[in-house]
Length: 419
Ligand SMILES: [Zn+2]
Image (cartoon, rainbow, N blue to C red; front, side, top):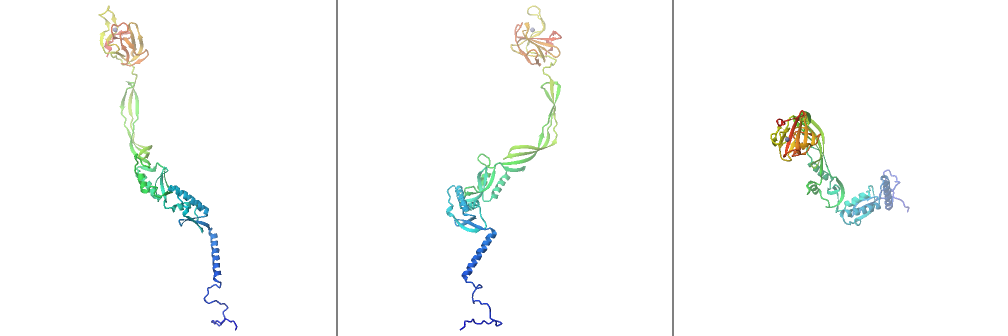
């Protein structure tokens, strides 16, 4: 018998040129070969993809079974793990082992972490460590919060509370910084505690944070009046009299000042607007030397007139007495009867210790029998200045002042000239 295929009738009665086993797939290839080809195709396609987007083989790092990151090589991963272990130990204050929980897996990935990023990613996965925004004041940790904004808002609210209506700007005196860092969980005061630390006065009455504000204030201030001096030749030197009292003016002053917790540390007058000008005080000042003669004589000492000017009726003979004697106790101060120039001071025969003063009108007054002369020839003295002390030197019976007035070269009775 001939091996013939049964004729398959079709529409037009022709024999088909292609055969297909009933029930098979589209490919005529055996299944095993087909799978291999698909595999090759997929690998080829992946290679094409890797080449197209620059993918590389990478090392995935798992910590306690969870993927923490992908790095370029196992060396980088080892480095990151070692660093994370050191950091974690530092943060927790005790030896902390990470490597036990770390596993690596080779793979392909589009994103690679740096060693440092992987270290952070591992630390993030440690339960007893947390990533916080930490506030430091002059380098010292005060507290922390998960959101940086919370700390910023707290700082702003503190600044705002210390502002006044005239504050132009405000800043903290201390160096404040907000830094993100890993800390042991619970080791850093939380936001509420931080707020309390910053807003409560310490034992010494100061705050942890001092605020410096710049203020600009305006106020009305008086403007001091100036003083003008005019010379007056009717008054003695050292004497003065107010001719016109001064009046203060007024001005609006704009002051810019720096306050450190309310205490002024710096100030600058920015502007002064005069509202009313001050008017000056006018003061007369005496120019007359106090040693100038006044033209009248005062008693050089106060005492009993024991002998007048003229002929004496008592004692030896009838000698003429060219002065007056005033009895005083030894050491009594003797004053110049008027201002003038001392023209003699010394011991003179019967006069004993004697002083002569020439006055501006040419008169000379004489003071004799002194126990001690207190001025020298050439000195200027004022009326009333003490020039000597009373005694009994020269020809004198008892302590007294012998006083003479010489006018036009002639000794006259001084009694009537004394006031
Ligand atoms: Zn006498």
